[in-house]
Image 1 (cartoon, helix red, strand yellow):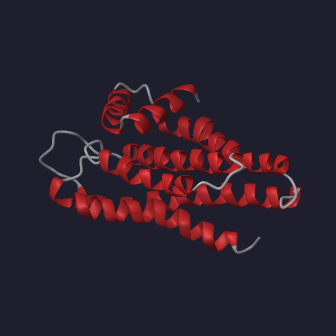
Image 2: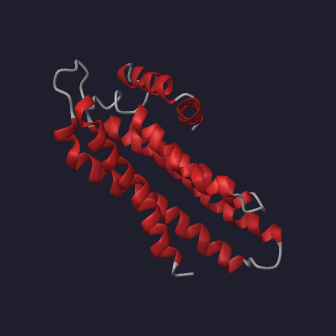
Length: 189
């Protein structure tokens, strides 16, 4: 989990160099995507979802059942966002890849891009849960995922002429599915 968080914060602080470092680690086989998914990504979204219980310390409007429902819904939304985004973006990838570039694209790269994007959203959810005051800036932090996805276009070997389509597809699948699923499941509580 330590290397996952290191790469995640590198990508958050400097997306361009962060993706270069992730690409170098992936080429050197220092990164096992399946292992990161099971041992780092899933625990991270579980911890960030469980941070909903911090709201019990805030007082009256929140009770344990509400916090439990919020934690479960947050986990399910982030889990489904990851898988829906992988499916949606991978269906467009053959049209987006630049064959003239010397890099090779594989599914692991796309999985890492979506994993890091959803992990950033999970951190934003955790910040929203632990901050007692409702700050508008926290609601806009998930849109930073757009920058993370845009800077990942070189990592994914996206053709420069197709970056617009890539951004529409990637942002709609990651952010769109997160907000849509959050809205649908949020109506349950």
